[in-house]
Image (tube, rainbow, N blue to C red; front, side, top):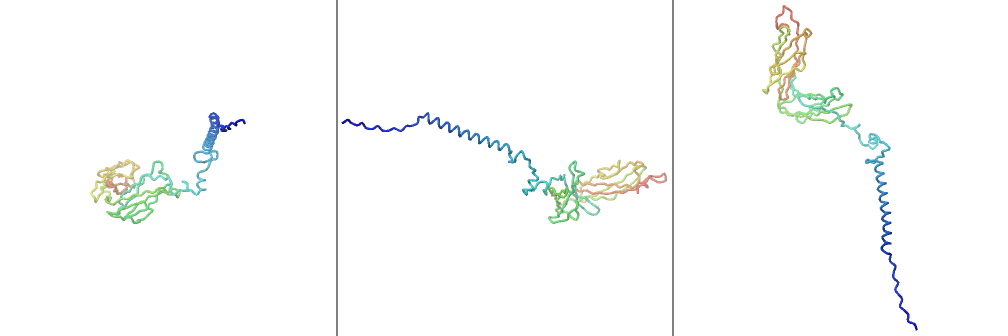
Length: 268
């Protein structure tokens, strides 16, 4: 009998390295193309709508959007941008009373604006009145404060608080002395006193053209013209250099001298 040869084992067919490499490359190309297309689509969407997420082709009224969302806008804000200007407190003597007054230097170009101010005063932390730009009734050692709020068209701007400790008293003015009219030259002497011993200076706050006052002595001189005779009110300010100011109104009736009148008789 013929002998049987043993069966050869069946070997599995394995793909060659070149076949594997070719199929993988195609898949990678497809994946890369998909990724690139996704990036391009995302960039197009972002650029067409803008960083804010709003479609550039349809403009949105931000004020209307704010109202619809219930978000307060600058149009309805209670703290609008109203120019305050520089504010300071000034001590003054008015008759037999000492007062502190708020002085506000309005910003350039807003002098004629319709901005008004609300004043709320306290003395030693307790309410002391509101509405007026000045306060009296305080004494040395008191701490006076005022809250200033600008108002325009019923809307309030940012408030500012000024305060100080009363350590200085303002000067006082004695009546104008030695009023004379010598020919057409008027002169008088304004004298101030300060109980704190501060050095005083003098200035004309409201006076006819040509009138002068010596800032150290308070001596007033005025060379009159024909149209200057008659009743006049002169406003003098006396300053102690430490925030204290005294205002004095000097009223004179200047009559044109006649040949029969002597010097000094024409100023009453």
